[in-house]
Structure formats: C-alpha cells, structure tokens
Length: 293
Image 1 (cartoon, rainbow, N blue to C red):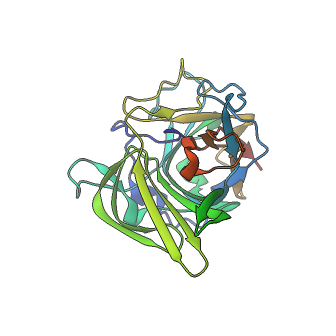
Image 2 (cartoon, rainbow, N blue to C red; image 1 turned 135 degrees about the vertical axis):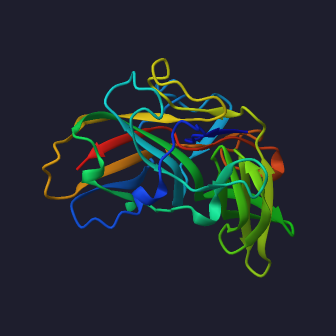
C-alpha cells in the first residue's frame, strides 16, 4: 500500500518547541490547512497524474490533520533544515527509538489554523518555498460491504499515521478508541465502519517499508532525507517579510485530496469493495500549494 505522505525525520531540523509557544502580542504568520479535491493531482515528481489504468480513486473528506515539521526557504538549493524551521513536533523515546509523541500533537481541520508564529521570529527576507511534513490524517471515504445477504454503501473513517515513527498511547478513529502504547512506523493505519444496530467495526494494518511516494517537484535540489518523505510547495507570489509588519499574514496550505484514496478495482464496478478483492494502493495527499493572503 502506497501513501502520499509528508513527513520528516532529520536530526538536523532541530527547533525548540518553546519558540512555537510564544505569547507575543505582535503580528503573526498563520498557517491554515485547506483540503482541496479540485487541486491538481500530482505524482512523486510533482507532475500532474491521472489515476492508473485498472485503478479507481475517490477524494476523501478530511476531518483533521497533524504535521511534524514546517520550514520556509528562499530558494530550491536550500537543504532541508537550513531554512527557517518554524515547527517540529515533540518527540519521545518511550517506545524505544525516537518517535513523534502523538499525545502532544497539534491538529487542525479544513480552513483551521495549524500553527501561528510571531513574525518577529522570522528573519526578514524573501521566501519562495514551504516545506511541510505531515504526521497524521483522519478522513472519511465511501466503501461497499455485504452483510446478512444485503449490500451496503457505508462511510468509513480512516486514521493514518504518516510520520517517520510515532509513539501512540491511544487514538480515536471516529467512535472507537484504539490502545497501542507502542511505536508505529510510517504507514500504520486503521479503518472504522459501522452498521445500524451493529456498532463500530475496526480493522488495522501496516504499509510495508519504502511504500511511500512523495510529491516533490524540486527533488533534485531539495532531496528527501533518508528514511523520511518531505514535500515542497512553491508560492505563486513570494512571501516577503520586512520586519516592519503591523498585521498578521495568513498562509493557506492548500493540500490536494484529488482522488488521493486509490485502489485496484478488482471487480471493475468503480466502488471500493474490500470484500471483493479491491486493494488500496495510495492514501493521503497529492500535492501542496502555499498561498499568501
């Protein structure tokens, strides 16, 4: 199973979390998630891509998302971690190896602010690129199942952990809570479905290592660190910080969900039918465009 993911596990990208908790009363730059099912659908090289022959896709309805890392850079030659690193999620070693601490993660839904950073924390300059690494996503898709000799088209909620490694004590998919108390590598996921009178039904899985496609249009000059998957988006108009701003700057982090949930349509009926051999091959995000407002 492939995932279109945004994540980063680079020790060189250190930043104090206290910086992101600044109580400055001055102007801020606000990063706002937007999930757009009409935005261009990209492949791993950042080029437009249609759904593969024999596959089908749907555009999920996103509930919430979490990021592990945010960075602004002036040009494509800036190595990851060498730009303005604005956020790095808390990490722990409770589960053994270093991992994102899910219990302290930040979350935001559609058109919600994920991160606010005082503008006086940014060096004056011109920024052309935003790098974002996502750690978790929760969204709804449609699926078809058969039970008691009847066929049902249901909403299913997907919880997908897409960071490099995440320590999970527990998490709620929709109505069901899953307890792990363990590290989970990139690609750990869970589905929750329900039928009236039956209640919640949860299935879990783990994508194999290296089953990650990364939409990165400038990979040659913005390489993905080993063991991670990092996406870069270019501003349509550069973000210019003078240091004399008196009002907030909003950055819309527009994420493509255009047929981002993709499966092999084994039965050829264009609906996702896990009981009939349909196999999910991609989940997640199909590109990013940062827009200054």
